[in-house]
Image (cartoon, rainbow, N blue to C red):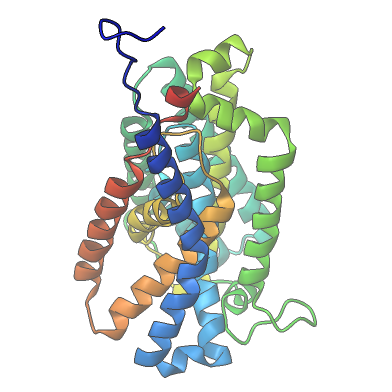
Length: 335
């Protein structure tokens, strides 16, 4: 019985409900935002709306989308991967230097797979054993990778890009008889695989369980170290693929060619609505975020904003979106 001496306890459920609805509505909006922004770009840059312009946009999105796979999964498990730019640079240099040396592309692929496994194991293991935030671990590993590349090449990262890699990122490239650049086809194939893993496999369920509540995941006999190693290895593999495609796109190699992708992958994930607190999100949202990020960058270029100021605008956008999405409570607090 309620009396004046025992008033009903105050609840914050309505406020929490409003926050949840706001978060979900914002996430759904991101799927439509790329279409709206593309129309705005068409007004400023009509050439983008041609078949060649749209294919070029998709190629740029493909490189970013592939690189953002690992960032998405890392953030889902309440982590982050700042070694992605270094691995992109590593792959770009390896493919050009080894091609110039006469190595087969198969051997180059095997080298990159081996490097990716090493980076993934180091990131995942150190993050688990040292109990240090992944930001510190992955940033340190990235610095080591970049330093090792410069040391091994003596700073001379020039080389030769295979013709078929260049064709893969060309708007006039074809996937067999399909008039679609191979880079875009690769992104589609990777996206399907990633979404199937997220939604249909036990590894996908472990991703979200670990990000939602690491302690509860431990009680459920989920081996956090194994999951983290899997996530960071997948991240390195995808970053390597992005690095190879970037080599074909730029026609040259540089150890720091992946630096812009530190901000861009983060922005794509955040724009897509994947929670930085972990446990919520999906690569499907990141795909929308990738398209929006690429279009936003293209719009900045249309207004003749140089690369330095583009980074400033991207940083401001990330801060604004973090402020918006960060208002949502962590999954563990809703259980």
